[in-house]
Image 1 (tube, helix red, strand yellow):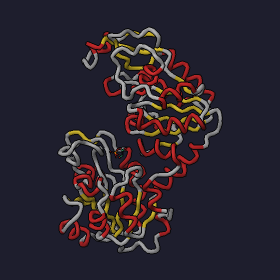
Image 2: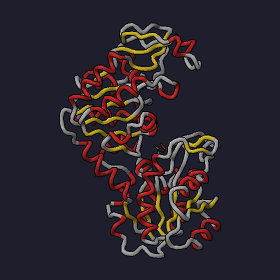
Image 3: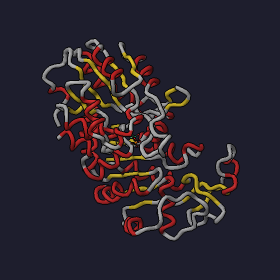
Image 4: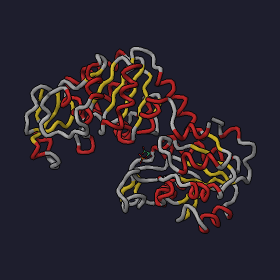
Length: 389
Ligand code: 3PG
């Protein structure tokens, strides 16, 4: 990848920058601005050199049903960026006459944020016409959105076919740090939580090759417990117990929870569900219960592994964090922060959990990628990186 540093000329040049702008927003308020703060490095690098920066990105999830796709706006993101750096404006379109006019009028050293790319089907469909409509706004393209580099979208793989393209400073740092995490110092501990086995499967298969212990937590763990023939009550499962899970289960490096906080299924989701929580060994979950977090026995097991580890990699909350079952995730965050291991974490929910505890500075590297981080760990590259090569 050619680095943004090697762009031959900056002053007055319109530069299209694809950045990680996908942050959680509620009622116009940004709930966690970690990605935006990281996106600023490349933006500042370019504005200090008096380039004209046209910032593009998405907000909201891919794969939502038609109608819910791309309804979010980047207006709040532009406002938030404007509180960190001067001269940020927003255009309500991402392509077309209004976007062209705003890009043409942009002074050197200023930043123009265009509207959510996912409002256009051409973005997720990687429509060449949409890529061209974006590319015509600038002379040079900088890819800095590591978080979306696993998506074969127009702003990820389409634009580099048209404009001279470079890697942004954040993208370069992500690749450098995660490459190191692919060949960790030993003993090495990986912890993967969250949901949806299908999205984690390639990373898990790669991690059991390169790490010494691979802990599976959160809702993901119930898929494994079920496949192991254990009672998981009415807990959420994302996958049928298929051959891939069974093969992973046979791997001696795989570590599963040994105890759990469970509640009766009828109480799950109630604001006071904690009152009904019962600590159970992992073998004694009852058919009418739901597993919501791992227990202190598992936390102690993980703390022991983290303490001995020279490298820790972590992606995904280890319990039902969003519904208040936070203890397992928080215990592990503290254990990793206290260990001397090189620690790498990723995934929006995981970062938010660690930020809540004020522990972010005690981690060695915090990836802005969730799915992208897992895919990079599995394959060592991503479509967005290939497109720049
Ligand atoms: C993320 O939040 O992981 C990235 O911005 C990619 O978002 P997506 O999973 O909706 O493509």
